[in-house]
Amino acid sequence: MAGPYSVSGTGTQTIAQPSALVVATVGRIATSRSGRANPPNWYDVALLTPGDTNGWYTPVAVTGDPFVMLLPPGCNRLGYAVLGATSLTLTEVPAPNYQKQPWDRNPALFSQGGPTFVNGATALTTLFSYTVPTGRIARVVRLRAQIVRQITPTSASYVQANLRINTATVSAAVLPAQAENIQAWDDLGGGPLDLPAGSVIDGQYVNNDTGGQVLISLIANGYLFDA
Image (cartoon, rainbow, N blue to C red; front, top):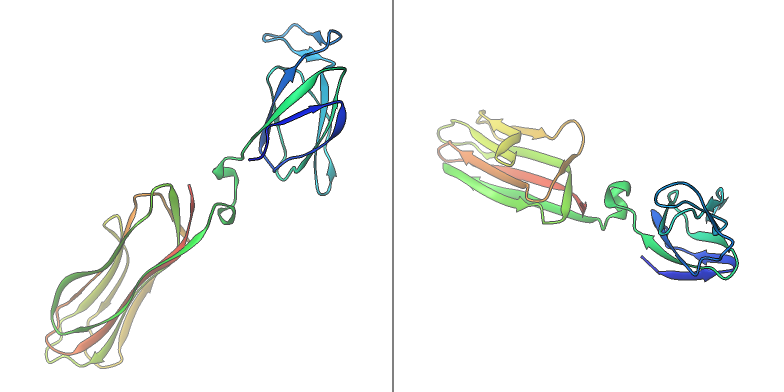
């Protein structure tokens, strides 16, 4: 956030689209009057008018010291009329992340996993494991488990590929058939998943066939943004 700003008299101050301003009064003039509230509510101190690229909002009277002025989203300027010799110190309050869209929260793509050829019997193997970083949220937009038979096994049992979140299986493909070019897959359904920091996404597979070859793809991707 920019600032703080010191303003007096009348004019316009550029602001950095904060969610609020904290207004402190310096040298309040003698003609300012207080009401019956506790802490005191003041009259005839200043009028502040927030604005954006479309125009101006309703003027707001400064009635407290310090005074918190909430702003509509996108305000990038502030008109002020400060009475007498009073001056104001304006401190910007940044919008909390939960009020912002993910694309305004330092987004970055992430992609984990990929394809691997597996020949014959293979014990349970972890292809990848990914932990959501501290201070970030992972929006998972794709999870795919896929198995494609490349070479017919000498003895077929089954091949399985799983994608898990915090050890719970969310996508699984199972291939019992032994003919070449037969495939099985499973995709994430129901839309994106938002995972908090510390969540673990992993991909595992097991091949219980004897001989032969399969192509296994375990893919997780999406983007990260600030929590």
